[in-house]
Image (cartoon, rainbow, N blue to C red; front, side, top):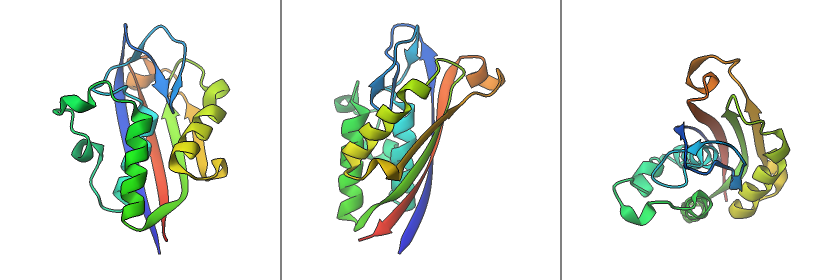
Length: 158
C-alpha cells in the first residue's frame, strides 16, 4: 500500500541567524527565523511524510509554544518523524523536494543535503531528491525576504 503526502514551509530571512538547509549550514549574510533552527527544507519533508499518513504536521508534534523545541536541530526532529512513521508501519519510498530561494546558490550543497536526509531517514540517497530554484526576483523569495520549500513523500507500507 502506498500513501502520498505534500509538505510546504516558509521562513523569513533575517540578520543574526544561521542559514541551515537540509542539515547543511550554508554561508550567507542572513539566516532563517524560526522557533527551531528554521530548516525550511527539512520542515517541508517532515510535513510531507506526516501528511501521507494523516498524522498532522510538525506543529502538532513539535509545537512552537513548547520551549523544549526552541533552537531545535531539525535533523533530530526528522529522526523522530521517521520513528513515528515506522511505528505506524511505513517506510519511505521516495521524497522529492524543492527549495525556492533567490540567493544563495544552493547547487554546491544539494548532494550533502540529500545525504544528510537519507542518513537520518535510514534510506538510500537515491530515494531523496532535492532541487533548488529561484522565482526570477518575483514574490517574497525573489525579493530575498524569505525561503520556501515544497516536498512530496511517497510512503510504503512495510
